[in-house]
Image (cartoon, rainbow, N blue to C red; front, side, top):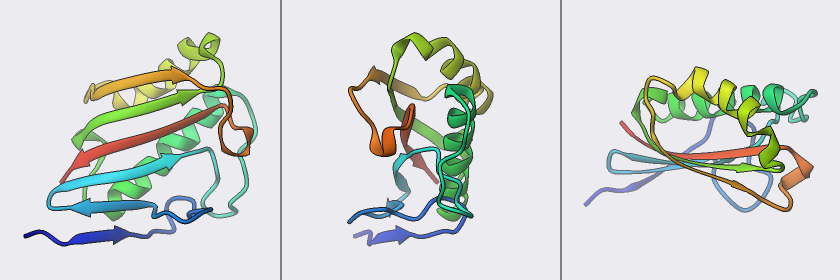
Length: 127
């Protein structure tokens, strides 16, 4: 039976609550939702949806690297946007990172996100 492994890395923001950055069970990696925090400073990045999506994707890359995998192995992403009117700009940046992989995806508009950010993304990947 597989053991559950906790992933901790400086390549992604530290957890700001009672949760892990990521968990691994067998060959499946479950990444907690990433918001646009700079992992070096724990501060929100400036800018709009494009800049925030860019930072979120970089944070996901850091988590996946620490778990021994990468964006090409993402099976599913769940994307949360503050404003669906920004979907095209979000999707442009998202496509730079996930375009070749094309994981299964859900994208929804939500009333509010942690720290009032514009975007949060969580992923499930394989190793």
